[in-house]
Length: 543
Image 1 (cartoon, rainbow, N blue to C red):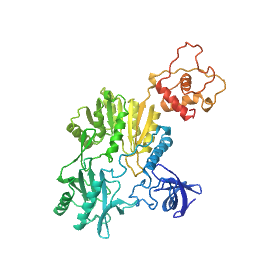
Image 2 (cartoon, rainbow, N blue to C red):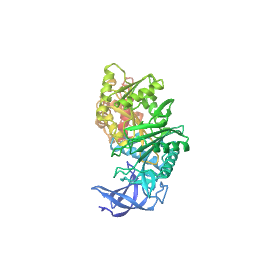
Image 3 (cartoon, helix red, strand yellow):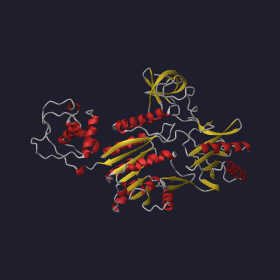
Image 4 (cartoon, helix red, strand yellow):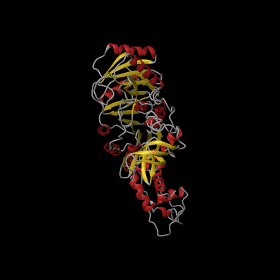
């Protein structure tokens, strides 16, 4: 057992879900952030639990082969990016392994379902939305990010994740703000003007500046300063003031006023034009978003002839992309303002085959079906908390044939996939996407297909008592049948198992589960049951 503040030496063995390195000191598990596999470090213990401890690196004794810098060891050294100490190939490898770990441990699924994480087109400067808090250091206005577990601002001159245009706008504003000697908000005293700065950019290299201030009204002097920024940055198309006088950590205030330029930025995805305001949700990494959505849409077979539900639709980004290919789209969103924004965007883009529905997903699914609507597929892109179990069970209850799940949290994805597998859905290949290089975050997309047991018949043939082959000794037919029924919700016969074994080249005992006559007609194992049986073979290590 280790003690608090004790300095220990250990080797990092693996990167676990969440991005921290795992090593062992005298057999006791120690989690150490900002490390890579193979690192030998001196670390100071900062917390001790019953079965593990956490520690921070104080010295890098030997660098692992995946580390990019040997003289940087802290969160702040890498601008708050918890994977920036890793070479990019290693980041991708770690993300793949993290997804595999939770899919196997939480989802109780085969880790082989997880494909290699796809790289981002841009490894740095990919963020189209930048938010930095202000602070004051030795009388100078600075901005950056909060230090870990602190509200102290760590200054960053050139943030590696921010768009280059965003970095430039922030630097110009700080230069003018220092010249004008503006005050900075002190959250303890609840005094001072400047709270946060937000910059949003688009693919056309145009920008929106949002300044968050601790005041109720627009001061002419502040407006003059902001207009001066537009003279120095011609790419600026819009300036907002956000008035936030509350004692809160929420960035934007309730009142956001456009004081110069256009009210929204325009961004295009797959030929659809979206209008982005200070409060709009839009994907941070647009080039990679295009790849992610293209993959998600391609998973639905014969989509042009199908009616698709966009659940948790928000302003309908995915729904409108679906509308370009699907026969009909129903975009369900419980927040009324977001649903209205989606209707507006659809109208501006002359999209007529999408209906925006304001309400709860499980309620609206029932209503649509009672109205006689055919629902062929459903797409989910939920927040990090995942999908409520009641909604998943409603999808299974109404037997929507296909479900595409886009996830920003592999652990809740794994939890939800287990629920759907138990409800009779087959989980397809899971494709991770690196949406946020230099960080431990990863997104995934997967197709789930409903297996309808009513379409199949079960033929039971008796087993005999002959000796088992080596392959058969790994699992009995009954164990395979129980596994398939528990996971997929339908029965498989001994005959079907024998047919799949023959296909896989597994030697059966002589005449076992084979017809007595050559011309005897047999039912052929359906493809869905064949895949389920193969899944059982993999589970029991028969193949």
